[in-house]
Image (cartoon, rainbow, N blue to C red; front, side, top):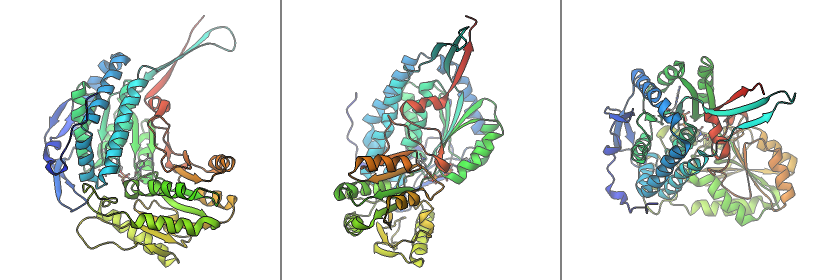
Length: 488
Ligand code: NAP
């Protein structure tokens, strides 16, 4: 593997990452979407605004490359994916700086994201050669059942701004390992990372047209046109639940296979018998990774009465120690939010909770400086009728709710339309496993603050999504089972 090169954050020029739309292995120059640095509201670069015709050109390119890629031996596909991992790792500092600039997240979070994102290429380089089928006797004993797994076809991939690298590679790596060609539409706020990665795929040997990247100000019409094309057989979307619902309705028109990674409202349940320090360590990761802008972010701290006050004191102390500032500053613990709209929403949710009786222990008011900042905030006495009990805060705000019994905690945890991640802290393993089983979530972190792992199935239940990304499950989202009934 190539050693990671040193990169000077001060020297980054974003214009070279905005070369154009990436279609059929070529860069098609254009403009129309300014990329804003949320730390100071300056413009970093301008990327092209794809039309419906551009999107259809991307579908044509994906189609032209499809046959060759699906017939490329799995070992060769795996080796190309492995090179993507190596090149990403070698350029980790550059990519982390770019993510931090366009998204605002602290460099330490951005570095973590690059490592996580690259790992999908390593994992799926290994999975590409382990796609197994089935061969067995039919129950009647008269013939055999053969099941082969085939690439599903052209995949449209749509990603959000909060993990500009990882949300893309979590889709592209399994799709390519399965033998599919793709069109990626990254979020308009953070397209530079997606375009930087396109350069890496080309350098790694991904053939032209296998990965295409387009940005647009008309995501609805552009996506709808692609979904209406019979050559497109897959939609994998990560983003908000309302947009996910609309896309499911659109995909229904042509019965396109859908994977949906949607919003969350993660409960973080702390029982009296929890190890307090471990719970606080976990809380800081679950709440403050990405400054709270994560679908898995702890959205509701549900804390038992006996440990409540100590937990609040510890959390407030740790949150107060975080320095707010531009993500690229080495000392920054909390970067800016993505947009002014995001800060407005957080401000509204906090005001609503205060109106309903919540007490602010820390933070709670936005600064007036340039940039989209909101400070680390801790709130107690939050009413379960508050809007933030039911909506994603997507920011550095920790509301704490108090409970008495296990049944009450489980009922509160499940009182949401979402079911992505949940966190449980107790030193009683039996209780921990029992509560983990009762909580309606696709993923539970037991005595830890992080669930994401490229080797594990990531995904939600209820209105948090459909399907799983990562692990051995992720590749199957890009494959169809082909059953062949034999006469012998
Ligand atoms: P969003 O508004 O739903 O946007 C996500 C993506 O969808 C963006 O690329 C956006 O493009 C595009 N889009 C918007 N409207 C569309 C339409 N009508 N048709 C097709 N595409 C459309 O979500 P976001 O604000 O970027 O991301 C935050 C949300 O993502 C949160 O709810 C978070 O929980 C969720 N999320 C979930 C996971 C998970 O794994 N479950 C992971 C990360 C984030 P534009 O940028 O051009 O509008």
